[in-house]
Amino acid sequence: MDDKEKMTKYINAVYQNIRTAVQSIEDILPKVKDTNLQKELANEEDKYLALEKECELLAKAEKIEGIKDNNWFEKARLWGSINMSTMTDKTTRHIAELMLLGTFMGFLTCIKDQADHQGVSSELDEILTNLKELERKNIDALIPFLV
Image (cartoon, rainbow, N blue to C red; front, side, top):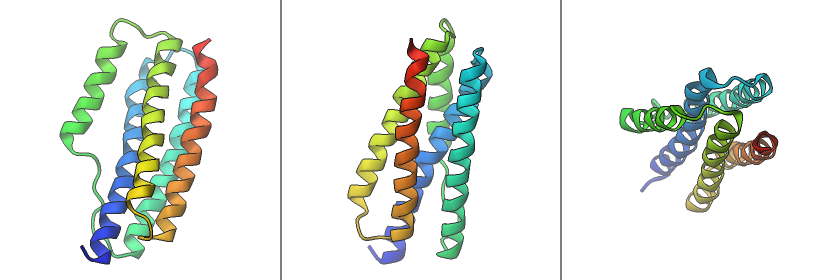
């Protein structure tokens, strides 16, 4: 695999992790009744969108055509999972738990992507580090909604 292919694979992995977070927030936000949780999720979404933009700009600078969002099957699976899980329980605690599970999965994906793509791109490493830090902060911010 040449350097451009490695970079394309790496940037797509990071971008899809970010897009999963954004889609999750967009899917669940209309179900949230708690004003403080709404504000927290909207704030998180803004930060994910900023990282998404960074990925898009880096892809453009690296002349990587069309970084890929998650495929329609993954989007439908995520949407269905959220809707099924909140059909009978829309409590703040349950929604926070769902978001925590997803955020932790995103954090784990960051660790695996970092290990899988060592030495490919320092710029993308920085975006991934920022994503990982955001995920950690989001975990800390969501835990109080469980009590």
